[in-house]
Image 1 (tube, rainbow, N blue to C red):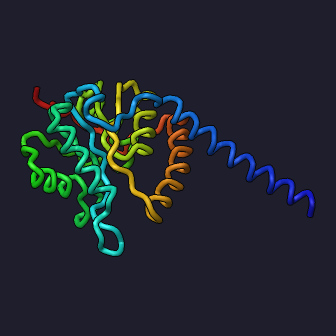
Image 2 (cartoon, helix red, strand yellow):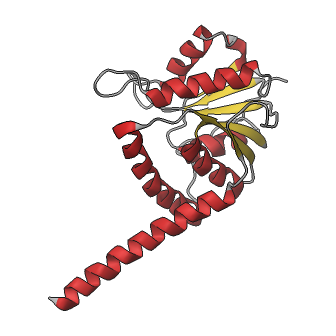
Image 3 (tube, rainbow, N blue to C red):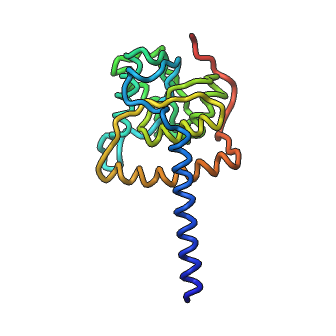
Length: 211
């Protein structure tokens, strides 16, 4: 019994160490690369807006979505980006993150000609790698909440993309806490993806974003 308890204890300790190491790696490798104001952030041609669902299971608007829209609009109107590349999940006929984002961005005053859609951004890794391999961007501004920006920037750095992040307003409360817990595990999965050389689900032909 004592032997099994020791094994369980060592396993738990090992898991915790892996989580801590992966989270530390992300934070250290992205230090100074996320920004809260448009004044300080450098300019880039393209802002990569990371997708999420507009509505929660209870029918309420997802605040993570709402605040990302607000951040993208703010960044564009401050002339710190010229295009918004919306990358999200379009995995089924009834679920289309990029188009939903596009409609709300247009409603907020962004010209349709300045919005580019990536329908194959199923994961953050897919979105970041496709911004380089498909949309030919070597330097991008990632738009999401800070914790998500940090992970995306860490992926970009590993994949040879020069990235900074513009932080959308964070979400507190129960939903915010659950997402932050999932984020810690997502960073472990990210490290495994980088170690194993994980590639996006889909690549394809290159797409040129106008000047």
